[in-house]
Length: 328
Image (tube, rainbow, N blue to C red):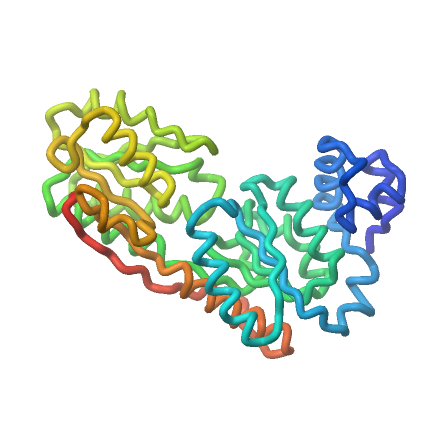
């Protein structure tokens, strides 16, 4: 049964006009609490505005929505550059939304894009359960996932080969003599990409006889937890694996601020140096997952869907490149 705007208003405890203002992005007289409540209700009920689910879907707006987990992350910058290169060639504009790595914020962004009559959406999902995004499929809206998968998959998806690449880096670290390894990541359970990197790195390292610890950090990216881990592993010449570029930079800054020499005292490696890793002192060992190439691939699939072509609901992995440098 289709959810109506009146049912959404009743569930959120606001008027129908407030829901209409929310859907058209008129937030000037709306509190943050109200916006979050409406976003949560829309996500829970799977509400899709009727005019987008039917008649207007047959008319092109030549606008494509892109929802990323963190628009300030440099990965997103390169990803969007790749997407824009493809959409520009097809005469389409992109509307970029920051999901904030928060389900409520993401739900609000998706609702606004659907209400804006975009032709399709590229989504880096904040959640892993497909049921949370079923409303997009019911809307008949072309969607392609990027960087992260859903269970079950639900939409076509383009990612790096995260598990394999992380395993290869772990094997390289152990081969260089590191036996005590620390993985630094945001909460692993909250995103498939984090889980794959952690599990791939851990499995390969442990198979090679090394021990692996996990340091999960919050949105602020504070890596002070390195200190007690280093104290516990003093004399063992340990190494750190940062699971994304922001954490790699934060780890390097923390080590430099505490006068801890890399790699003499501790090895350092991770993901995404964004062209600065080879300029660091020492140059950093990293996995380069080619986000611009991923952006092009995901945009090509969305353009094909919008054009009515059949695109399989499957995962496409863009192989990453491992750069072994002086930090290990």
